[in-house]
Image (tube, rainbow, N blue to C red; front, side, top):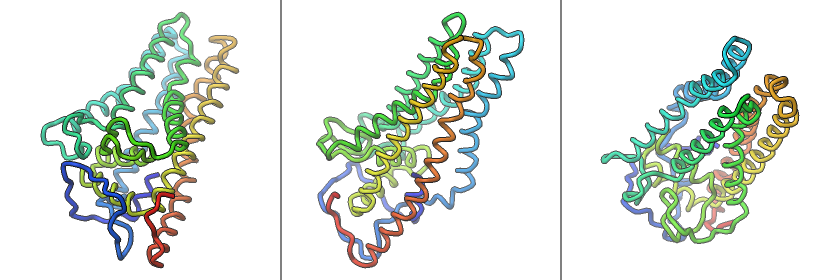
Length: 310
């Protein structure tokens, strides 16, 4: 989904205190509203960041598990070590996001979010982190530890995010009952991928509140972008649920029956397949998004861009 931002240019747009949704946006003569963010300028940092994420979230748990599983350590101790070392980066990231959003001079919090300073992604991050921590605690508390349950930690994220994406993709643009990131109460519901991109780029990507303002302008001005994001909701939501269900079936079908005797044969599935799936989906998304952005440019050049919600 990050390729959606490839047309971004640096600008000096300033954010206001409130996000104004004023119906049909003004016409942009030379193309869609630019975004004050460039992925190309951050290519090196993006590669380093995602390499570290994949290593800490997928490679390290598997390596540690199999390195410790056949030692004299107890099964519970092995799982505790793996969970502690793989969960620490997420805890640190949560603390950094909390500080970035809640500090007095924050430059990345949602527009109009002076009272509730955190964004939608941060709330989702918090709830999912708690759910995964609870799942790991239960799996370790029992004797022997339930390895398939522990290996389902990535699936919790797939089921949580996948369900939300798919449900939102099926809903009409209903008025919001509460604020979601920069969208005020009563604003029409937007695709979940819109909120994910806004929050991650603004906070974790360093785009700041200026990006939130420009992202709103791009969404309102471009019917192609609105249609693309809705399709991404369905694509990623359905894919996440199918992948999560498949991994769950393998974990419990193969490793759940004979306890420890087959636990080591399925652990790698839970911590690797979700990331392989995400990589394939990201590759397909990049190809599709590039085609959609090309179509958007051509429509704008031909003067055929319109503002109706498709």
